[in-house]
Length: 193
Figure 1 (spheres, rainbow, N blue to C red):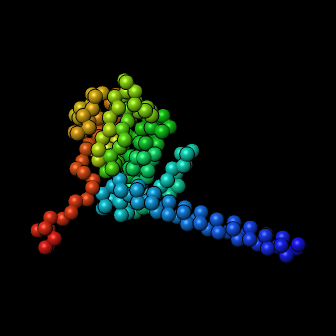
Figure 2: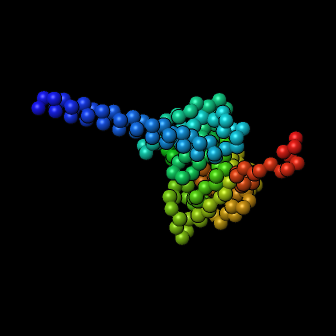
C-alpha cells in the first residue's frame, strides 16, 4: 500500500511538473507572438530597436523587450501601435483623464485600426451619433501643436486623407494615412542591384 501511495505521489508530482513546463513554453511562444505583432505596427527601421510592452487588464505595463530608440510597441485589444515617449505620455494622460503634455509625439499604426469615435475620446463602440471612423495604415502626431497643422477637423472624417481626431478636446491629434504597410516584392530591376 505504501509503495502504491508513493508511486501515485511521484506520478502526480511528475504530472504537475510536465503541466507547468508546457505552460511555461506556451507563455514563451505567446510572448514571442505578441512581440512580433507589436513590432508590426512600425517601420522596420523603428521596430528593430523599439521596446515592446504588454499591458495587463489593470493597465500595468510589463516590458517584454528593452529598446534603444525611444519607441515602445504594444498591442491593446486588437490595435497594434508603436509610440515615442511623448506619445506614451499623451496616451497616459488620456487614460487618466488628465491634461496631455505640451509636447509633440509620433505614433505608428501601420496595421491600421478597427475604428474609434472621431468625437468622443472615451467611446468604446459605434453609436448613431459618435462619428465612428476606421483608418487604414497611419501615423498619429499628438500634442497641442498639431492643432496648427490646418487639417480638417470635422466630425465626419475622411480616413483616406489627413484629419484631426477628437477635435475640440484636449486629446485632439493628427491622423495621417500612409501607404500600405504590407511589404511589396522588389521589382525585377531592383533585384539586379
